[in-house]
Length: 114
Length: 112
Image 1 (cartoon, rainbow over the protein chains, first blue to last red):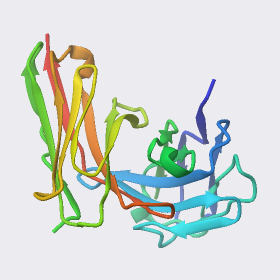
Image 2: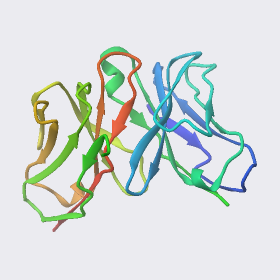
Image 3: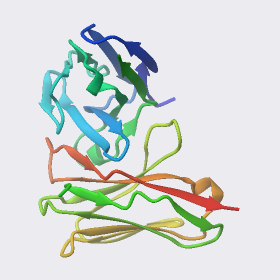
């Protein structure tokens, strides 16, 4: 089954404790992206990657890191999480060229930072 | 002013009604326009996308883009209770390396 998977689905952590949210897709997609979703603000793009070793900042990259060492994986790293990073996070992927606009989203990771 | 504005609702309609969902935007560089549906506690799923101005139809759904007014719409005909969800518009510029900008979403309830 074609899908985007994220782990963990739920995470409660404390301020300053480094964490990684994994994202994996099995569709051989070139484009991958991370979003956060907050009430009233909708989805905001954090980082995206056009292909292996190619990443770029979205609209809200501060406090986040990403890496793209393999085509299928695109982990999101919070090196020193803060309470304002409490949010619902989504990973998405799509093919390149015209298919880039057909993004497939993962199920989401709900992160709480206390 | 936010880059993409969308009436948050909630919008309640009776089953069978025609639903109109709208977004306005300020960035004239946007060329691709997308509509996503998001059920509660799920990730968004793409309904349809359009390029530049014009209409696109897919079953009960019709997307319209008016770039001169910076206004896009999604129409749902013969709405069903299963259409109850949050609808998100999204936009992007042309070509690779563009990021996506989403509206805040409109929550729709279709009542049986």
